[in-house]
Every structure is written in structure tokens, then in C-alpha cells.
Image (cartoon, rainbow, N blue to C red; front, top):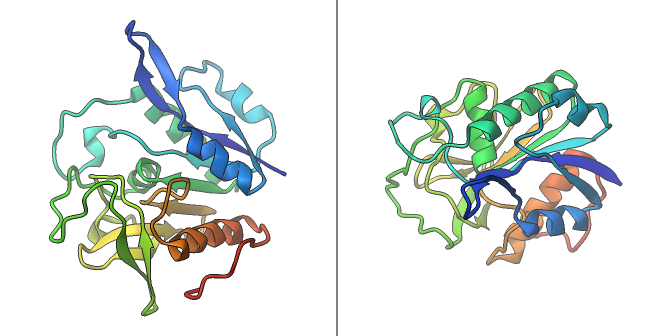
Length: 227
């Protein structure tokens, strides 16, 4: 069984106290792949204690907006400074120590920004992408399409993708990145959410198999026709 660190959303409870929030779907999905998660608090004081215990993977989760310096446009959305700082430390530690990293939604955007890319805030897509409605995306260098879920308003346009990465799935109609990898670092990042529901079984299996291949895990379920 693989062991993974997973980041959490930074929030506040009804008393104004800081909280860490992790959607249960992450636990259910990664456990189904045989991966045991260790959530990392955004408020941990000793970084060395986090990484001293062996782990095989870092998952950088979704939810919320990053600091304005990472965006093409200005914004005044609520920030998560403790989370941002911790995620940056963890991502850089994993890159330096050749530990695989998976980024999801905001996590994908954060990874792109840390390596020189930019994010577009509340993107005005040419073809609207309503939250909660799946849409078609093209697998790069093929004529194949998959249907992916959509729970974001910010995005990374192809022109703003870091030169350290190359896209593997794109929203062709809007010229935005849906998934990318690195030729030199062990990084796989999704704009969509692998752990959430898909309208298409084909999209779900493509995503699952992509993660399994990335981590060197045996594939399960039925092989999708597009693969």
C-alpha cells in the first residue's frame, strides 16, 4: 500500500477559529486505489516532522483561490495564506526528493504558478462551462475526446502554462489546460476532480488509469475504449 500526504482547504468555523477541511471523496477515491492518506494541517509548526515519516506521494487538493500575484487579472477573493505556504514547501520538497505529486483543480493551478505559469481568475470562456456540468476535452496528440467533470471558475489557458509542463488533455474550444505532466519532474495535474462523480464511465476510467499508470499501479476495472 502506498502512503500519501494530502493537503487541506483552510477555513474558519462559526467561532472564527481556523479549520482544516478535507472532502471525504478524496479519502474514498484514493483508498479505492490502495493509497492510504495522511492529511496535513495547514497550521503545523514543524515542517520536518511532516516529511520525516516516509511517504510515497503528495496530493495537492482543490478548493479556493490563490494569491493575486499568481493571476493574470487582479482579484480580492478570500485567501488561504497558511495553506499556500505549506503547499509550496511540500511541492518543492517533493520535487527535490523525486516524490510524485498529483495536483487537483486549485492544486494544478498552484503547481503551474510555482513554476512560472499564470492563472486566469473567473475565466470568461468563449464556450460557457457551467459548474457541475461535464464537458468534452481532447487528449493531446490524438483525435480522442473524453468527458470530464467541471467544478472550477479559474483556469490555466494554454498560453499561460509553465514551460516546465506540457498539456495532455485540453478544453479545445476554450484553449485551456485540463491536465498536464512534466518531462523532468514526477508531476501529474488535473483541472477536473478525479475523486468526484463523472457523467461518463469512459472519463472516469481514463482518469483512474492515468493515475495508476503514473504511480506504477496495476490497472483495474474495464479498459476504456479510448485508451
